[in-house]
Length: 388
Image 1 (tube, rainbow, N blue to C red):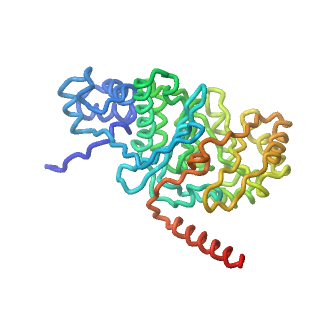
Image 2 (cartoon, one colour):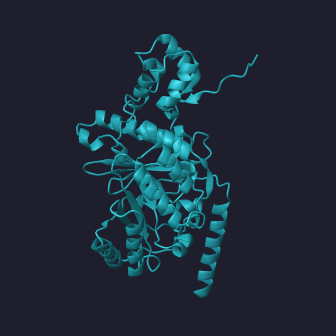
Image 3 (cartoon, helix red, strand yellow):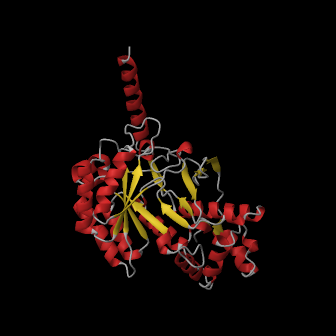
């Protein structure tokens, strides 16, 4: 006889299909999964006893099967532009990840994390300097939206100006980590975000951003067609391999071919957003804009828009942001080719909440953080020595 006690599951991290399968195995009616999802993600209850359309017997069993996560906020900052950033502890309390809420007049965008740190080592990204610990579970990913959405609901009830604290309308996987290196958990989260019994977000309001993990893109082709953002940052293999090292494994031709395949796989009209961080004297020349326009025309003509991102600096950064004139000239080249091009407005830089600035608190298994700090310290010492 197996006397081992069954480990409780994080109720927030379970999709409808996972709940249905679990309940069926326990001899319960699978349709109860829909009711449970609504209680957890629409009414934001934190107590199984409050799920009043479920029997007392089922509620009692659920206390044995599931638990609600405790969200421990390590820090909370508010930018002068209204952007909010939370540093929240992981479930094991060993590390912490950052999430950012970006409010605008017509929407509220939540930037969430998928990993503790990041496995990739993009040269301009602050997260990369923190190293990598592990993937987040589906529960830890979904809990980020669950936490913020429930917080906004509480604020809404407490304030007379309900529009000020309206719910999250958009979710982007652009926080810490590479989402497609944690594809299974991310896709579970996506199914919850878009479920009518949970958050009910349309697929165009959920964006997965990737640095180019081709196997993950192939998995997306089979399982979803949410909005896609590609962190490209360079128009040729030589430069991209320098800035985004994963390009050495999945070069531009393979990557863009797979992106085009993803766009064609959807039954609805979708596009890819090409993210391009502007680095002074590195990737911001007119020739780079021309190469980028040619690349888009070859693979995703008419199905791409470009988002030029002014580089957001951070302590010890080795790059500088391109000048406004350089960014505008770059954009003009693309627009002349009828490519929709926007220049991203920087949000939350004063709290290191802008694109590429998230760092968190990572128990680094890769020792990349230690190596980076040693190299930075050495460069600092050499610079000071040369000034005398």
